[in-house]
Length: 345
Image (tube, rainbow, N blue to C red; front, side):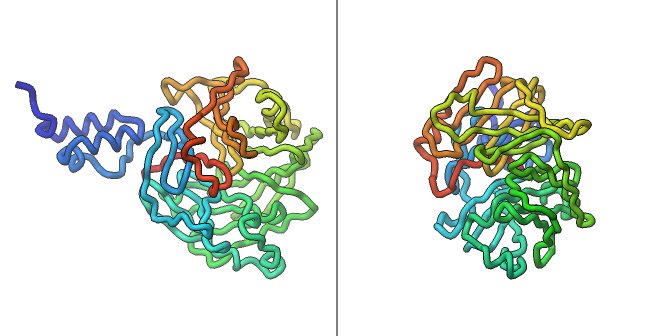
């Protein structure tokens, strides 16, 4: 007679759980029975980085790797005064009542408040224009791993500021010149901000100080939407033309920063990497770390509200695979879909 599942030795159950590498599989494993649920910790500490989920609403998340939708009961109301402004290191950036900024881990339900937007100087506060004021928020590291993290914001495409945990107000960077800053990415404690002209502001919160890098290449991204990210040690800029009558291949352009020449150079392959790009969050992964994933692909979300504007673009054969689930469940109040990398810690 076979052994009942609930009667397996605890060490065997623990051993099996530690062989699981996908967070959703770990959740299902704990739900098999009460014994299994009690034998393994609620928060797994052994999991590798997870592939992103797509936020469809305030409590539903689409996993493109499994084509399944996960439902999470977030301590968050779906009111018109609460909006998800992005994600960073698995934490949602939430804007509440126009001025209050909240970080929330949707997996662990841990949350913390950042300084209110009303703490900015008067000349900035007077320009407060509802959600348009807060363009982008990124973190230097996960608040789950260290209290010594910094949050960086782009305001009205003009102002750059940061805060640390425990700060009562935001600290503005003194940036000279008239630049339109659109996106920012963090790397090794520094924040790299890119303008519509392709210029880079390297911001160090330890000073605080900022250095403007005047790129030698002529790049004009005024009529395109773009995002920046690091793929390994390479800083990439993925731009998309906003025209609706062009092919996906014509709409995507990938530029890599050449730090020796200080210019952006177009590339046509991602090698073994895959990109998840969107207006509010973007990230890169190596397919070497994820079995079954195809390399040289861009997972893209809609920034211009087209029904066919969410899918997977292959740079190898220029084909597009559409993700149809979002057309049925996507909540337009989010503004545009947001990538979230699950962080169960």
